[in-house]
Length: 136
Image (cartoon, rainbow, N blue to C red; front, top):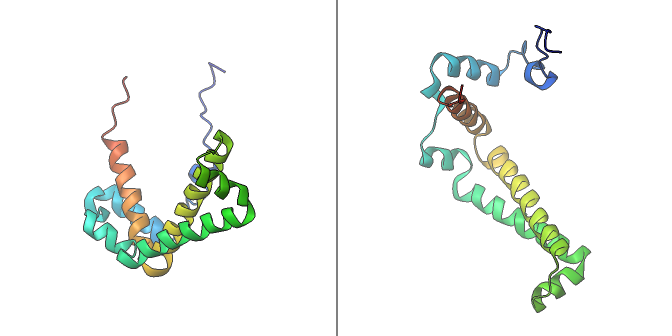
């Protein structure tokens, strides 16, 4: 397909192209002025829910690990004895990661400002794209 001048654009890149919601309006503002939605570390922490959001994240991790140990008690026994195998480590790490991501989502959705967080990350990655060296 070297002679094909048409470039395929993935569905995930254009599926919300014609929507008119707060995220698309913020994306237009970010294109015009990329620094408009960037937050400082303290502002981002507050938008993620602050200490309460951090508690939601930690609580979700504890609930996820408790559920893992309740469903597979051998993993807890192996952990106490220092006998975890690589598959057990992977299960423990996977459960912790998924629990953290769920807690992060619940934290900024329920006790934080979800729009500010999402707009910050859109602006952050847009800035990274503008400043990226492609090596051409």
